[in-house]
Image (cartoon, rainbow, N blue to C red; front, side, top):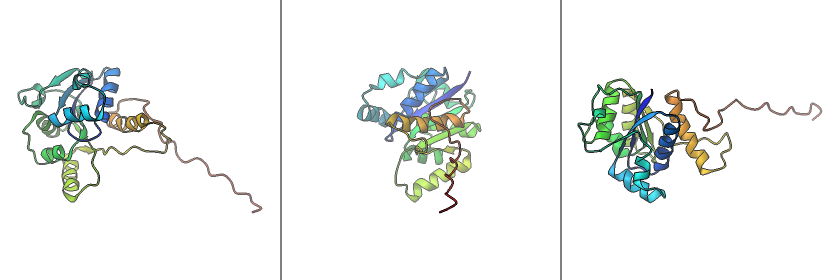
Length: 196
């Protein structure tokens, strides 16, 4: 059975992480969740949910301070880890190997074990330090998947935009879904009247 480690860090856009957890739960994919203190505050600021509502979506919840958690070890088996949303502070910590909390340690372990690490940054504009950190992580094997929804499928609600980003993360792990309509190529152009 598939198992993913999910981190919610302190960036705006916590709805992406919440929706990701909801979809994984429906698909019976096991989740080990780590939530930073900043993310807990953002849950309360950006949604109508309690932190406990979000925690209840996970299979298991791990304390951010518990560096003796199973997910802090390379021996813990999972198909990878997603940090959604991922703050620039978290990106900097992972890029520098500064594993002073469980989320950073689990990401570090995911990289060293050559498992899939997907980071969903939600920040704009990006400065050169942000870009350098993301490049460093991409070179180390992480997938940088910014929260940039597409518009070709004509989304009509905010939920559609959220689902597109969540669907793109699921695609990285080859998890089948129908969260957005896939691109099927351009429609044939209308033929011009030959008499014009």
